[in-house]
Length: 277
Image (cartoon, rainbow, N blue to C red; front, side, top):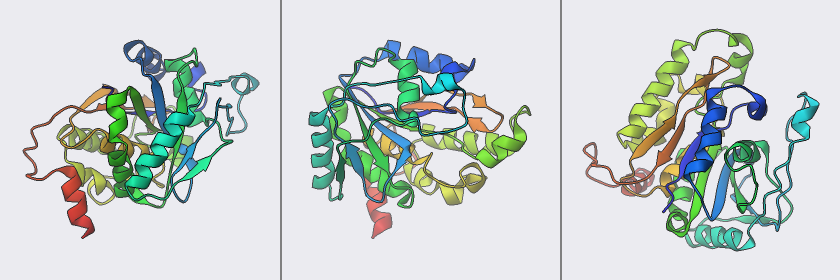
């Protein structure tokens, strides 16, 4: 069994940066040996869920204005038609419409952290898109539908950013981490640790400075897929915490295991269903 993971992938330059998050990602692959990886990246946005089904992934350099050496990096990991079809079947069974993309490779939200964690690029990787306008509950339910993968050697990774206000990144570089970033991250960490899934799903209203840290939601949505895939009553383990460029929190979590849910008498899935009625 491989518990789902949420990680912050940071700048495309992370493979070259001397940063704690880079060291963490390099150590991640030493502890885990998945048979395949399902990567949910903030950098693939679609109206409905999409999964790539390719024999071998190409490397998408979905950025501009960086040094030439970054564009020379490649992560042409094998794909998995079988895993892509399994993902399609699980999501369709759960009532989600889904499309299959037979050409798309891996964007930098996928390949940059994978390059550090599993540099040999020999583990099959399938990528699943996010729906930026659908919100946390939709992505939590996506994760719930994908739970059967967890017990079959598939590592589900949500790749985004714990905080992601790029406008403030440009003005705060070189300064200490501001309170509005720290307060949001501390609230998120406490809420994840206590297993308060309904509060996490409503983070936009409940977390301090939520909209400032995430002017748009796509970089936090992979967290909710990993959270749903972890199963009911999932506990968490914070694997890493650091800050890059003053305002980008690079926190990472392993989600899974059991939790004494003292905060609620019903399961997260039941609570989500109740809110939808």
